[in-house]
Length: 283
Image (tube, rainbow, N blue to C red; front, side, top):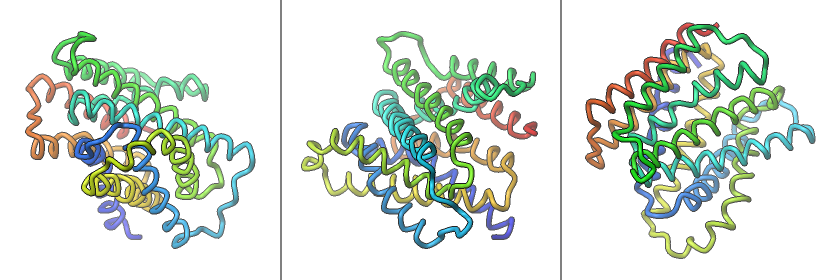
C-alpha cells in the first residue's frame, strides 16, 4: 500500500469509527443488544478478513495470551455497552466527546502501569481534556441526561484505554485482525445470551444498522487501521483519528438535528486540540 492510499484508508477508518454512534442511535434497541449484534457481524467480517489476509509470520496465541484476549473482549464489550448507553441517554455529540477522553486515561494509566515517564505536555493534554469535558456538559447534575450520558461516555473512554494498554502488553507476535476476532468472539459469547430475548422484536432496519456497525465500523475500520499502520507512523494515525468526534458530531447534527451549543463546540475543540498536540509531540 502506498502512502497516499494509506492516508485515504486511515481517514475512511476514522470516518467509520465516527459513525458508530450514529448507527447505534438509529438501532431502536437496547445497548446490550447493540453490543451483541455488532459483535455477531464483526465476527463474520473479521473472520473473512483473517481468511483473505492471513499472515504467514503470525503465531497462534499461547494460553496466557488467549486469557488476556478474552479479558480484552470483556473490556471491549463493556466499552460498547457504556458508549451506546451514553448515546441513548444524551445523544451522539456528548457521547462521542466523552469517549474522546480515552487518550487522557491512556497517558495516566500508561505512566503508572508501564512505569514510563509522563511528559509535561501530556499532563497539559489531560488538563485540556478535563476542561473540555466540563464545557461539554451544559449542567452538572445526576438528574440531567447530559451529565449521566457524559459519565457513561467517560466510562467507555476509560474502558477503551484499558483495552488499548492490555492489547499493547498481550498481542506481541499476533496478527492484529486475528486478535480482534478473538475479542469479538468473546463479546458475542457474553452478550448474545443477554440479547437473545430481544432478537424477535428487532425490525429489519435494526438488523441493517447492526450489520453496518459490525461489518463497516468494526471489521472494515479495524482492517483499514491495521493496513495503514504498516505504512504510516503511529503518530500520524493518532492525529487523523482525533477527527473521529468531528465526524460523529457533524453527522448527528445533519441526521438528528443535534445542534451543538457554542459551549459544547468550545469543549470539543479543547479535547480534539489536546489529542492533536499530544499525538504530534509523541516520540
